[in-house]
Image (cartoon, rainbow, N blue to C red; front, top):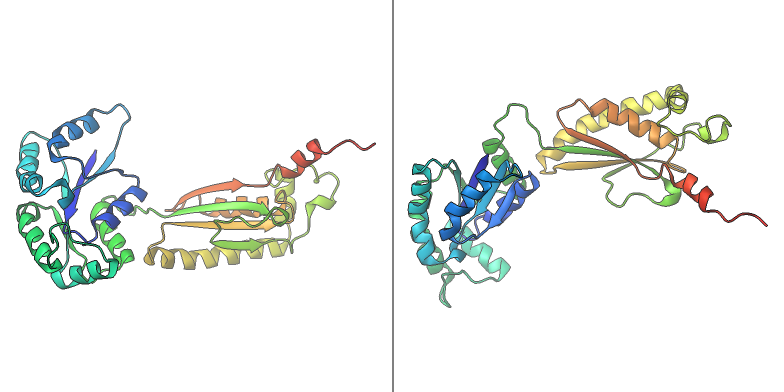
Length: 297
């Protein structure tokens, strides 16, 4: 199990880091009382649910006295055989003051006084935790996407691992474009199997329809050009901090052409370094509409 203690200066990015870890599949718990740390670690290690990744956030909200004791509690836990890593977030006082002023929030230790005095008081409380940290990230000049990249660099141990997910969705334009689509492709320019009697009741999941649609040169060319574009876009989206891309392929009813091209695109990436899944949103809607249609008088 991979267990991370996420701590550091208030306003330095701990909350953003917890959201990044949660998106990466970590079981996240925020500000658990320090006295419950040993019990919580033991429970996660003994859990029958096979929790593989845990992130525990700790900051000044646990209380000044508890925060002073945290370093010694963690040292005892390491001494008793518990394995975890400490990720500490730092930022300059000037940057932290600016962030607090922008959000109009009070520093927990300011106590009605100046923000910078509260920041320095917190910095002193965290000296031992910072000294024992496995990783220290200074976010003074980091954007969120750069923070994400830095955390991936630290925690993605497996060579070539990638947390980018592709979702290919087929749909029918007459039922509306998927609201979560990042990219939308219209394949209504291809010949429609709907007008071929033996293909009409089938779908793009059937070999006869797939072979018919892909027998046209412009279908093959579309697939090649679409893949070229995705091969260009995906690395650039990753650089910008995106962790998923929804590619929607539409035809009139979402049953033949869009299903075929969605399957073809999925096939081009299913064995790639990216996570990959497909969905045929409207493939059954025509059939269901026919079943539900009132009989003619």
